[in-house]
Length: 171
Image (cartoon, rainbow, N blue to C red; front, side, top):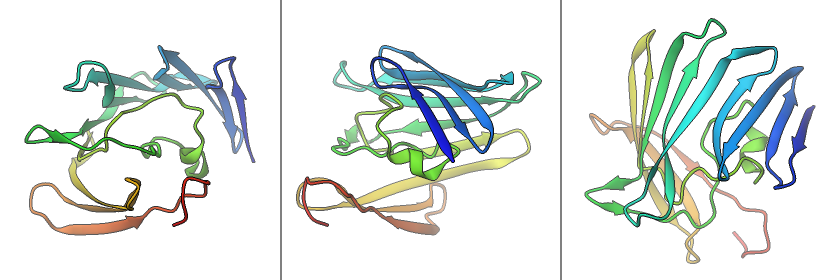
């Protein structure tokens, strides 16, 4: 069972999932850090950069630390290819959370105004994983599918279909 505690701005400040409690810290509505309540050094830190419009921000890097305060890896995100980005009209959070279901809860602040185009996962224990994301859209601009392939050689990995359960429009 999952339990979420929200602050006055409706942002999650603490969650407990399978007896693991995570604390969430924000800056101006953007998630800045998460950490294990019983092992505070075991954490993720989030870095944002301004988009080309100079107003919106996009998550650019997540850094992971273990309980001994040693950096274990990082994930880098880009949103623009050849200067072109796609606005994320109906965001679903990045794959950052322990529970898949909480990816759909709008309680973790802002991550980006644009759709992720590339993801590079770096870890000291294995080679980098580099992904390219391509999208198809419903007529109203919501993501219909997300195709993920290898950024270096184009090898196809998988396609995710996106379903929305809101009154915006039927799928």
